[in-house]
Image (cartoon, one colour):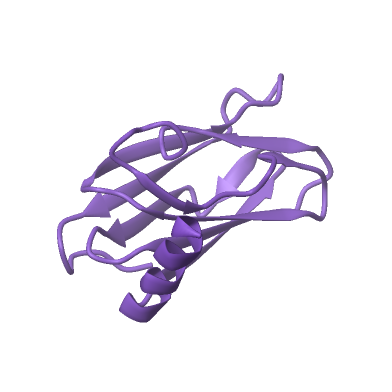
Length: 118
């Protein structure tokens, strides 16, 4: 019930929506800029032929408010996942945890109030 209330409140404030493609073997775009004053809806779509697995401090940092998370961060080809979160200013590196994908990294830069664009 609390998660639903948080998600509804996020919608009322206006969300930043970002789409990232997980391709073989990179994220596109690799750098995302957001602003800290509104929640972000990050959708990752696997457009490649290989499975991918999203990981990073956006999922584990206690300062990041996770408003909605998927059941799994594993992405088979053709599938997507969406994370709704609000993070304080900072730089958050994300990566693919699948063995053999060590260079598959991206960065979310959260800037102070009103600074970024999605």
